[in-house]
Amino acid sequence: MKLDRRSFIQGSAVMGGAMMLGGAVAPALAEQIPAPKDYMAAPEPIGDDQISETFEAELVIIGAGASGSVACATAAENGASVIVLQKAECVFTHGSGFAACGTKIQAEKGIETPDPWKVLGDIAREAGANLGKWEVLKLWADYGAEMGDWLVDKFEDSEYGPFLIDGGSEFSEPWNRNYPVPHLPRGTKVGTGNIMAICTALVDEAVATGLVDVKYETPAVQLRQDESGRVTGVIAKNPDGNYILCNATKGVIIAAGGYEGNAKMREDFLGQAIGLGVGYSRPELTQGDGILMAIWAGGRIQRLPHCSNIHYDPGILVPTQKGTTIPWLRVNKLGKRFSNEDVCYDSVWAQDIRQPGCMHYQIFDDNYLEDLPNIGKGMTQYGKWETLVPDGVANGDIYCADTIEQLAEMIEVPVENFVATVERYNELADIDAEYEPDFGKLAYKVKKIQKPPFYAIPRQATCLTSLSGLEIDGNLHVLNADNEPIPGLFACGNSSGNFFGGVYQSMSTPCMSIGRAFVTARVAAWRALGIDK
Figure 1 (tube, one colour):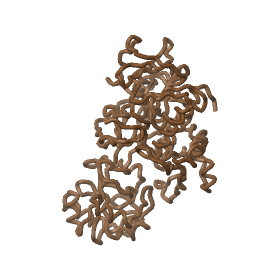
Figure 2 (cartoon, one colour):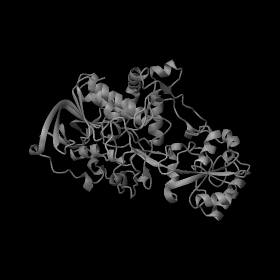
Figure 3 (cartoon, helix red, strand yellow):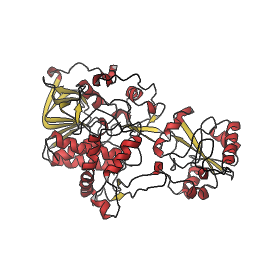
Figure 4 (cartoon, helix red, strand yellow):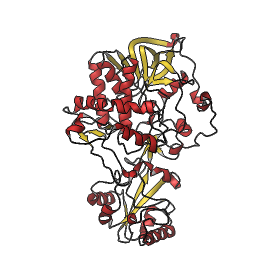
């Protein structure tokens, strides 16, 4: 089925699973690089005799997603000729908004933003375990506001605007904090939504300058290098199945996304996502192609651990409902409670992956509207619960029963275990202590489950994208085994690494995945063109 550029088809969820890479780490840099896998072995070079046509440009960009579209638009506005090689038949990306701090529109709307370094400090020190490169994180501090102003100036008063500027919240519990950084376009949607619409508009605008040639359904397959090792171009396969050569006089930018659709790479580098589905709607577009091409050319992938954004909302394998972080009772498929439920949205999965089926059920009773105001605030908690629960029950997304025993049968958990779990939870609600003794949840957040009807919401996370790609420096150069830049080769967005550390993206900074993609793409285009801003 062939899609036009303003269409979207949802791909199937892809399951992954295997052991995460392990072993001792040797002190030498070259020995810290993950051992080569079969799929990492460089293929035979494609010779000139196999090339059907040759094209010339200053920049060649691999990929037309979030980062590729911004790199393309940035290069065009600086007068550069560009060839974009896109595997899909259209610009394609996910996302609802981008993160920026200190933009003009934030000031106009009276939203007081923190210093960007405070935000980056959370990313680096908390979820990131200080594993990101500060020279790469610095790019968002230095250029995030410029990037945000650039996009708002383009689109605020267009069909793609206006932008909803999220005011954020600083709650008492640090695990529920989120900064006021999201910029959410609320106009025209294309395919997956508003960000895909903006990225499509950026590419269309760049093409209209006459400087940009976007080759759709033309996947890049191999980088070209000269005798010195400089990357000089990209070989791609056109829709007719013939190889074409696209020479780049100033550089090649890899903006091909991550590898979440590549089951083998997920097994080797995303151990935390074992057993979870792929949340990216077209996993065939995120096979790690750009990352692998750079590795074949001498680049190296970021050392473990790799980061990912694991999401419950939107749901892929189970119905979507708001409220994943509300600390209701959570039980596994055995009908047993298994953790302190009072954690941030981006780390709920860490307990789920230890449970049968990598999932849980949220359990609550018909006092939910009375309990909500006093159970703790969390990201994605809010919605119109007065209608959310009745509507969910009506459409079959929320289980509802008159007795605990009936609810156990509906969600297919052992009745005896489930009844005992609820009884124990109700006992904990009567304990006069700051923390309940079983799992250490703040006692005031333990609400009795005693007023029928009783409800259960299934929750199962999916891995939306991988966020750790190629080793880069602060100028977005791809680095080799000796930690030196490969001349002529740059990476941005999810094809690049070193921004997010740890194993998950902290949602204290919503929309930072797209914010990182946009900023690194803009800087990559500047640096490839020799522009020092």
